[in-house]
Length: 281
Image (cartoon, rainbow, N blue to C red; front, side, top):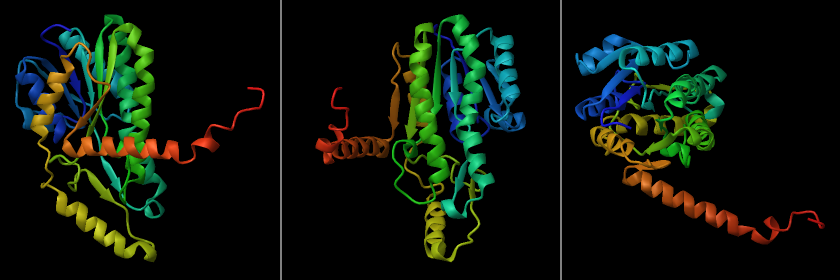
């Protein structure tokens, strides 16, 4: 990549997306910032000669294609795609409607699928590019309540990007998964989090406690999104960006705990696991 790269950032009207777009601009790069409302982008980032605001609903494949086309028309190339747009459908699985569960998958799994599909032809033509996808520690290990839909989407993103990496590497395209722990973004705000309606008495007490816990964390998370954004700009400039980046000390803890758990599970029934082949194999 040249010193000045062209970034396309989804979900850049608020939260982490604003910080990523601002960090890229501050580093001297060109940024196409997308959100459902371009007004939100301009309000958050202001006017800038290297900034293009584009309306994008990531669940719409045609809109994703149009956003990439607008990027190339304005800046001539696309170097870094940041799949950041997200939401949080929270609740116990039994109480979550099928529509809410599907909405989570459409936004945080098929959203990156749609935008990445739109971006790859341009990157392949250039023989260069980086696809950054904001996942979550919930895509590494899901250990709490209310996470079934969210974790399903993030585990899906992890598999999608890991598998995609080898397909596009021959064309000079790299992928990077980012797994933040708890950062002081707007993910837990009423604008981003929708709670399932309590309907089952067996879950009542845990629902009340979990909702109170999530709401009490909003605005008090330890992670600084501005520092994360600066770190991502730094990592994107490396000749070999990491395949996965644990974002935050709590994320490092999750990585290490999951690795230890997998090793223990592999070893727990090793003799049985390793004696399942045909006798003539």
